[in-house]
Every structure is written in structure tokens, then in C-alpha cells.
Length: 135
Image 1 (tube, rainbow, N blue to C red):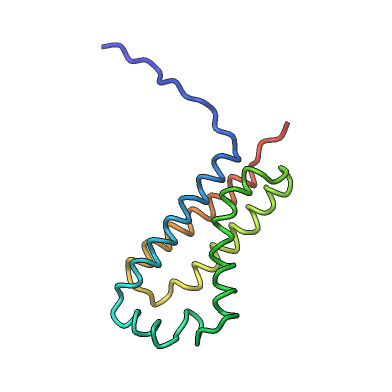
Image 2 (cartoon, rainbow, N blue to C red; image 1 turned 60 degrees about the horizontal axis):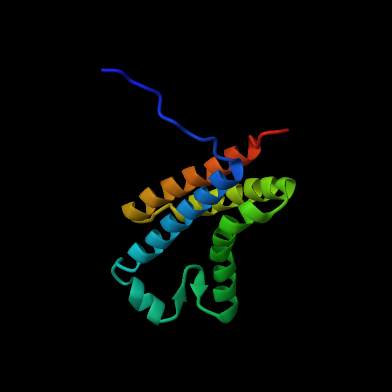
């Protein structure tokens, strides 16, 4: 039997970064969705308890901004200038890895599992951006 090499294309770093942010977003969505199954979680939400204290308009705006940025990075990784894109991915990748590491202690195992994947994806974003090829 003859084996031949499979054909492949080189994927630009921008597409890799965009795909990594999309994968990260899926993990965030699943983690938040599965979190609704934790006993008492929905009751707490209905009673006005948020992730960092009582729910207010300000806390919801801050949470919305925190969660919107990775989704925006799916697009911005394709649209920003190379230098700005590289640094945005490095800074935000490190930031979101830190956020996950701070929220994982004491969490249920499903959240820790997704959190480890999210930290790995965030750090992979940083590595990809850091190693951005030069002309």
C-alpha cells in the first residue's frame, strides 16, 4: 500500500486567532449554561445575586463588557492592523486567562474542566500572537 502526503494549506495567524477566540466563546457559553444546573443558582439569580454581589445595572454592564470582548475579538482579530491586533490578543489573552484562574477555585468540576480548557485557549492565543510571523 502506498502512502502519500495529505495536501494542506498554511493558515494565517489572523484566522488561527479568530478561531481560538470562537472556541473560547463556546467554552464560556457552555460553562455559564451548565452553571444554571448547579442547585440554588437560579434561585440566587432570581433573588438578585450576581457573580460578584448584588445585581445592579452597573454590575450587569460590566459583566456584559467582560463577556462581549472575546466575541468581538473573533472579528477584531481579522480586522485590526497587525500591530494592534497582535498586542490586543496578547493583552486580552493574558487578562482572560487570569480571570479564569481567579474564578476557578472552589468551583464544580465541570467549571474547572472548562476553565482549564479556557486558560489553555487563552494562553494559546497569547503564544500565537507573540509568534506572529515577520515579513
